[in-house]
Length: 495
Ligand code: BES
Ligand code: MN
Ligand code: ZN
Image (tube, rainbow, N blue to C red; front, side, top):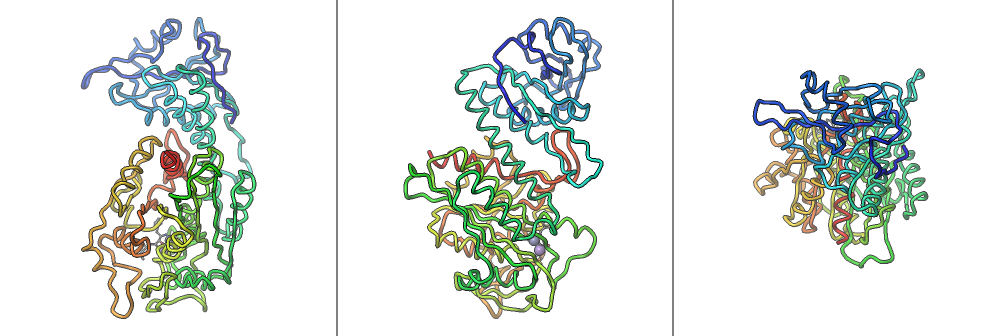
């Protein structure tokens, strides 16, 4: 999708469709709809439809008018944004996605979105462009009757300082494309996204954007003594891949080094502790954490913040076989800790244990991991919020700000010492499954053993990496969660 800016009067804009936001300025139950523009011609064009009370400005409510009088646009889309007092960049981002999805379903290829004047120019443009990229993605790649309906060109009618607004647009385009890059990886089924193929995608992307890329196989995993990672990988006929990307800009200080570690299980059968058949097909998305890290690295390489970033994705299948690890087995992680395998389906924490430790060995001073780690986080937070865990307050506060900037929803979860009891083993240092209660916390406590005293965040995206239903602003399928927040974090971390 091409994006361009316009500072012209939207009334004069020749476009397939001009999109304007309608907000409800009424107090409490009363509705009082008005359109967010200063142009009298646009206000005139919507006067009748607003007076009819057909328009309530409820969020995502679309009202499409053809041949609006006094406008050069062929159509005018009045898009509800909800209560004016609650309206922010967060809603605007989703509205832009909804505009894309509404108009592409009608076969339009281009349109113009008028940035509402109650949000600062740069923030508005950033939200609109990111949201439009999110909305433009569809996951029907393998349908033979796929209608290739996408928006090719978006114009944003903006206000504010031209140079800064232009920069915001460029950044947002990079971030939106990177989020969709992640979603493409996650969307692929496991026969078309083996660990080897994931590594090839990583290498190709790294070449394109100028990142250093190393890919290691079973030999290296064994020689690094990554017993936890190998314990999972040993059961599969597909070779595992340890993917390392490095972003080392010449102008960055030697320290800090941000480490991004992703779970890259390209298919999770559960292993010998096999999952029920019902819904197992979804476990192709168990590499969404790894894919999020790849998308974030792509954006970071293009946006060039002055900070070193090292990314590690531990990619393997989790399969049952004659070579697979079995419940009761003991594995020695790279850090030297011994792990009793209670449940082979708790494999994500095993690959991440070695990924986190290796990141520290490579010199990372701060760590973030992302993983579709537990069903329990879905029980706790549903499909709305991802879970965030932190062993460091400052790091959490920084991430909280990044979430706000990115418009992503994650909720902090606890890591009290008391939970440590749940992962005690009789014969080894720890077990890999702390049982059902507080399952998302138990998993995070396990990871904490390998982050040790390094400031660390863990993002459990099991409930948010895949949209179970289509929403007005996003298709059903992979969401690309965490990419935008990780990028905002890295940008701000660079100071
Ligand atoms: N990949 C799953 C977690 C998951 C569940 C992701 C639902 C996406 C949607 C993970 O490897 C897993 O199987 N976790 C187990 C852990 C348990 C055995 C301690 C779980 O959550 O049931
Ligand atoms: Mn599992
Ligand atoms: Zn898994």
